[in-house]
Length: 204
Image (cartoon, rainbow, N blue to C red; front, side, top):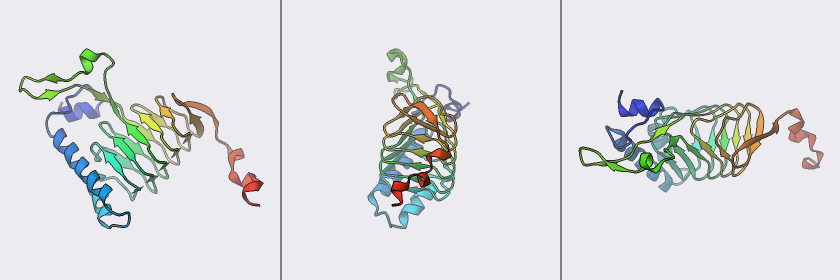
């Protein structure tokens, strides 16, 4: 099993081995170029096509930051506001019609709690490295992640759910839930009673 295969399988891996540093550097450079361009610059679409092979026409306001890009998959009609971060050291799968506010972070890597397992060390070849692992993130169709949401590795956010501003999602959220907090917890189910068309003051 290669170190990359270990990473994507959720096993301990060395992130500074094989071609992974070069893949990250390529993604970081593409993100930097994207962030320097005007929003209407056609080069942006070319960068996203290279950075996100499964982008499906997603619109990212920018600035953006991906660790790899190639391990993140967007469905159709997705949007992320400013300062979107995807540390896709594990698979990140985003469904259709997912919208994210400013400063949303999807963070797949996980570091050990014990310092002797977490700290950097010198390999036999003289290079400095560390060991970590990751867990996949899935955001299903029709979700809304409000400003400042952080989603941790191993989490699935169910279809049609809304995550409140500033939440840190450490556990999976069932479909059609309104959830918020640190750590994020389900507040209640979202129903047709939440329709804005029931609020007459919005249309007066």
